[in-house]
Length: 361
Ligand code: UD1
Image (cartoon, rainbow, N blue to C red; front, side, top):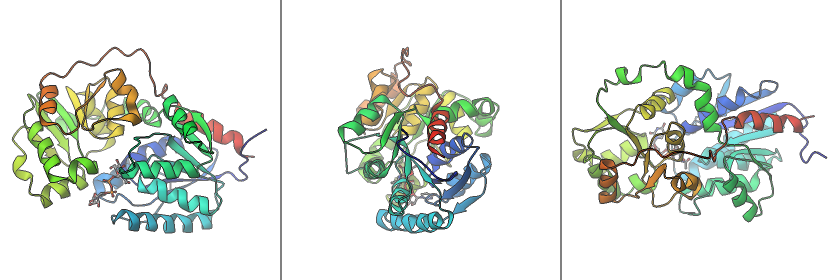
């Protein structure tokens, strides 16, 4: 017997922050038999953070809620209000939410209040630290979802331990699908020429609240990056840029630390692919480094969300420890031999589409 029966073939998919656009389009491309309502909350609104993705991935009609930045409460409230209006109008049989942003949580709340089942992509991912806003977003989305699609087996175990009610499916990481699907076009992009990069370099991304909101921590990271043996290319997220300016940290940017505007998905993958290694506090970039066989320095004390990467020594945890960052920048172990791919084979979106399709009558 089917556990979920969905009665129309209209599906809403909600996105709004940079990493969600390319995952959404990959899923949409596998859900071709359904009418898809694409909702962009507008959580991210800068050209480089949103429009560039919408253009590059040729989205079908998108309903933009233009929520923008605000405190977490206000931003989430606006997302709930906006998504609810669209869902009331469109009456989809399912809402798909992705990842762990305020968009994910707000859309889950709106959908559950209208009794519209939710499918959560990247379910079960846990840091076990509720002071991280994304952790709260994940727990809420998982609690409200009927379909819990996870990237790893460990994430299924997390959901079971929490007695989460939704049906759990280990499908693998949609981000891996995105990479495989776009790779032939990515390699044709002349990213390094465009950015005038010639020598060896590291690529860095730093934007999480625990690293950039505290000026002492952010300063420590910047000072350590300046001690790199290679140039460090740092596409700076607007949040980090704002913190840099407000805390007058510009003086800690030396000549070998090159700040650039946020880059497109294709450019980012090329920057990782051609680098000597990656420095990041992003879960997505950690996985992309892994799929591209690049060693990765992670600016976190622990990463239970993606612990398999640490276990196989593909990523190295340094927190914001000045000496440890410098030590790794100067002696970064080469990428290890990988015997097992914990996040699937890059066919997660097809599996998700099949499972959803089997429930639609
Ligand atoms: C959000 C997600 C995070 C994800 C990241 C990807 C939450 C809680 N966090 O973090 O999980 O890794 O997106 O980028 O949802 N800003 C701009 N222009 C923009 C977007 C943001 O100027 O287009 C600035 C604003 O000052 C804003 C700040 O960045 O207040 C933070 O943006 P917000 O969307 O709240 O969270 P992110 O840090 O981007």
